[in-house]
Length: 232
Image (cartoon, rainbow, N blue to C red; front, side):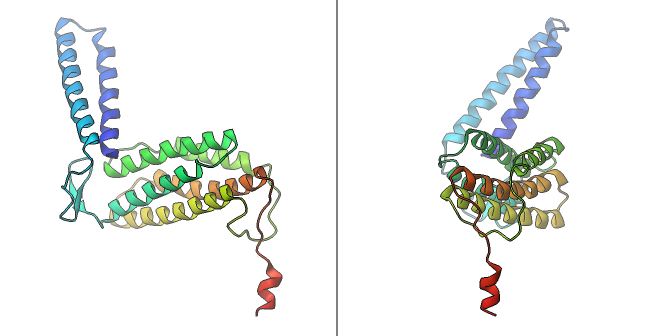
C-alpha cells in the first residue's frame, strides 16, 4: 500500500511537468498530454481499487510484492526494515492520542508523514524520498527542544507521565528500526539518509520524553546510582 502511494506521487509530478511543457507546445503535444492524463486517471482508479481491497491472498505463500513489482520473502531484510518503520509509526500514532503540546504534536505529525515516505522508499529500491533535508530538520528540532532542558547528571529511566513513557517506547522501537536498516545495508546498497533519519528520530524522542514530562508537571525519572551500589 505504501508503494501505491509513492507511485501516485510520481505520476502526479510527471503530469505537472507535462502540463507545463504543453503551454509552449503545439496541438500534437496537447493531444499527447491529454492522453497521458487519461491514462494516469485510469491508473489512479486502479490504485484506489487496490487500496480498498485489503485481503489479496497474494502473500499466502510467504512472499510479498515491492513497489517495483519484485516478489521477495517476507523475512527478507528489506521487508523486515519496512515492518520496523511501520511499527515505529504506529507507536507514534499511540503517542499522538495523548494530550500533547501543540508544537510537539505538529512535529510528530510531520515525522509520521516522513516515516510513511521512508517506508515507501524502502518498498521501491533506488527511489529516494528521504534525504539530507529531512535529516537536517530533525537536527533542528533536536537543538531547539534540547536547548531549554537542564543538563543531565544521571541516566534516565523510561517513565514519568504516560506521554513521556510512550515517547520512550517510540525511541526504542526506532532504534530497532535503525538496526534493521543497518542489516539491510549489509545485504543491499541503501542510501545513508534514511538510516540517519531513524537514528536522529530516536534521539529526538529521548529529548521529547523529557519535554513531555515537564509539560505534564513532572520531571525526569533518574537512575539512582546509590541503589545500584547498595546491591553490589
